[in-house]
Length: 434
Ligand SMILES: Nc1nc2c(ncn2[C@@H]2O[C@H](COP(=O)(O)OP(=O)(O)OP(=O)(O)O)[C@@H](O)[C@H]2O)c(=O)[nH]1
Image (cartoon, rainbow, N blue to C red; front, side, top):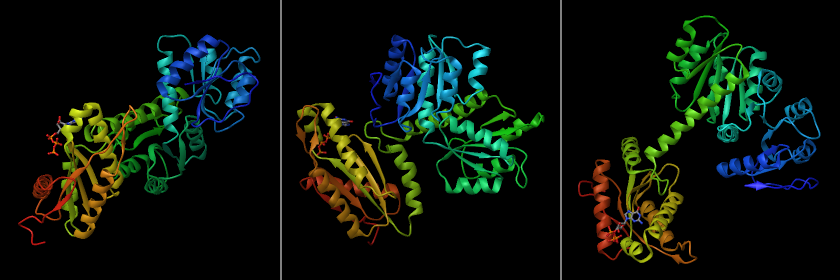
């Protein structure tokens, strides 16, 4: 999405923070803005001069990233670099020249990176960089080092890359910060610290947080050959030698958070149903068995839901509308589920819900509310029409195992269908006195 702004207009408020692209070539700026904006779905504002860029940046929350060229009509390259380095907005230089001299001038200031213009990969790299910096804003990083100066350096770099940064001066404080901040997904720790050293800290963190949830990078100025291996063997994801270069620091930090996200995506693909986003059947059984064994005292309820006459919906309106109806019912089930419940798409037009800690009356009343809410939902179709669907629900209130409860819930579902549909049917299993 491109937001063109006439040179003398004041900035317009934007809904989400976007990207400011500053370049003296309108055709290049427009090409990059279109491709970056389309691929990221973020607003990109184009400015042709430094003065124009300064006007846009008057509103501090409007941009999370500035991309700037070094050739502008109203300023030389040092003035451009000095200005952007002082704005507090993470800035990437997009330059026609990137030799050692430019590199040193750029990376000697508070500038995230320098990208060579007009190479086949430059737009791909900019898209990756912009996406990375945007996502970093939602990640907390923790820097652990007893040296205040070393902490300040790593902190300023991580802030430049958009992270929300926390600091700790020793291992014990670091453990406390992690315990109280679930948003911490990246930790950078020094080796030599008083009390607990970096290796011991990594070991203690790994007892609670897996590598695919919290990335740890060890750092040290020591020449010891074995230290890197020791950090990795104790559970660190990566290692950086002090003094690190700005570029290496950024690459390693980014690669590690990229990996965390990739693993998160793979986990979602393996555990979530693609159409509805609900947990899939496999994840349901994994979690459901755990919930069953953990809930012996308080008990749990298993409910099976099936959309009524769904074949008729498909036959009448087509498969796409059938999918919309499945998504609408999934939405109702998701909204109905409490934090401690486990809803899932069991397959086709069938759903399952495990709800712990409910009395029989509460369970029946709650599922009756769900049934009624689905019946009352007008499901909008792309052509402006609406449809409604109903569901039948079979409920089991207790049983010897999860599979026994599911069989009983399924049997009740069959009875609900046979008794006219759009109803909740509850029976206690024969092997349970109630
Ligand atoms: N659109 C769509 N249809 C699906 C999906 N999965 C299964 N179906 C269809 O769901 C329908 C299920 O029909 P039936 O099992 O005969 O049951 P029903 O028509 O809902 O009838 P009752 O359950 O007896 O009320 C079939 O037509 C399947 O093709 C899906 O992901 N999307």
